[in-house]
Length: 331
Length: 296
Picture (cartoon, rainbow over the protein chains, first blue to last red):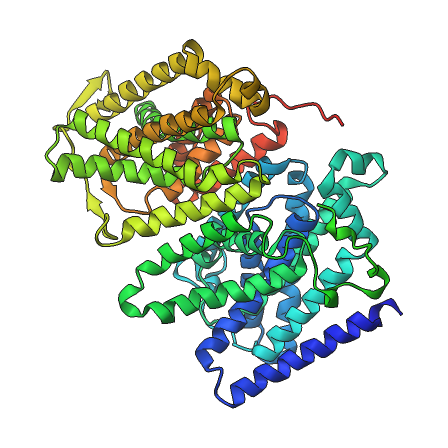
């Protein structure tokens, strides 16, 4: 019963506790709708960033086009919901499946040729792909008028509440944990450390790179699907290369190869950004970008390995992996 | 097919490509020497355009002097960026310096947007000279296009001389092979890297000014897209190689202008990047790049 060992149960208990705390904070008015939106956005970004961490942090495949898959997921899920005649939970879930599947399919098809490239060349190819997707979304209304093209898309039923987003974030964490500590995850880490050595050890590098890339992008698609059902306005510029930088920043600041780091940073980063807005007030809103940049530079200069390095919180390490043999601490 | 129209577009593409080439050179030189995608380079290009504009319009400098001031400011800026944000991370994993570069890029964009720096508004750059159109047969060429061609060609010749015929050029080439060995040979690695940043940034300043003369509207985010395109051009040609950067930039300029002329101006980014991906699939290290054999 690997799936229900003690750390897993503790993780579920922890998630339930956090969920109840957030609900309490909402009921007592401690968490107003504004901060609720920030929290939801942070969780959605966290799901996408977990996906990028699988691709880059664990499998070592540099991608700066992650937001493209986030956008594909958002638009596919949004369109599915919008076109289906009845709004409701089944439609919402179907739309999420469609968004996730579309992102995964596109990732598979583009990954098959592109993942042969190495490091910066792969990064720039994925960046280029992201820009192509953005242009496609900008012109999408020529093919499907409901997608709105450069004017943006509205009218997606806003079905996703905190409960759903939290549930999917929790599931994403579980999936990532199980992936990382599985044989496939080990194979991916071997590729990250040394692709040729991994190849020599009999690891089918193409296959595992593709698995990590497809799964990571599927998570981005899921995050996009949730976004489409939480925020009423979809626009191609939400999914441009700057959004890809956001995912990259979260993953690197959290620590490459640390799921804990990604989750903590996704939450922390969103709250710092919004917190700055509140702290600075309207007269200093111009300074927000400057302070954001300075924080980013300082954090990376002072803590180059990321907040968590490649360590993992105990809750995210399955029981069969405990006992000092945590191979993710490879380096 | 209208050949005159086509020839006109070729010249427009050349104009754009040559400006990209000046920016791409900075990317490729820095990449060659420290293996870093200097995302802040596009913003140095923006600063160059603004200083040139202020020098000419507000400080009343003559154009050549405004260009020199802009080059000097950008060279200093480039060296400062390297010293503060990249040097402490030089031997860290490369992604760390890349994140730092993204941070510097954001910093320059938002800091320059503050009202006491450059301000967030668009500014219109006046042409330093009257527009003149020359007719070569049935093809017309503007004096701005000739200016860009002459200046960029001169810069390329100068750079070629600097890199292959001077001591500092030899030092740069040595450092780009191997930092440790270069140091053993008595090359001052830190100083060489600083000079590389200075040269690359000064070229970006010239690029920024030429760009603002050709497309006379500037704002503090103007460097993002040309920077991205120029970087892509450098990758297309084979990053780290000076001829590769120029070749890639010329191709990029032609592709963009031709797509805008014959297909749709909205599609030009998509087509440019589609070509990039296709080229990389055939030549994974760019057109002129040599693919290293895989070895343990």
